[in-house]
Image (cartoon, rainbow, N blue to C red):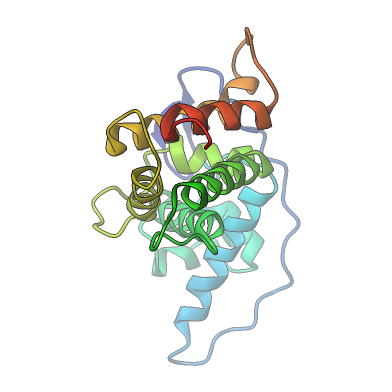
Length: 224
């Protein structure tokens, strides 16, 4: 957790699982100046540069606009043409990552004309994808879910669609709980499967596949 985000200082209040060292990222080749009217290219290059730093396991807590500018091959002041500070830049990057995360989870998932068996099967697929995606890049995952950088005032947040998908699938099953309550438990359980092994001494922990199967049974009822 951090109390301060800015371009030069990060004050940590506890130990983070994220990588917090800031090795000098290799500078991109000197960037060709955009033609008039193509300033959007600089904006996209900056977003791509920050996204690449996250891919390398560098925590957003320590990514600065200067570091992003160096990666993008532009002057240290260039990012300020599009972003007021590093929070604004990283917030947009993380929101886009959340959108890709949501799309990867829901790819091919149908919420219409469901039978209980089909709904349960898709719920299992959704859960397995969630854990796989989360574990593939824990720094980006924690940034998306633990960071205040992700915008919360939007009406079209990717998480809204994910939650609605889970509710629809659970509603088609012989669920022992009210679907919205079950969906909340579902997401909390998946978050725990991804996060807890790296943060706690675990007791009674099974494999991820076994935990996913138990979680689906808990929220959707037993398989027919």
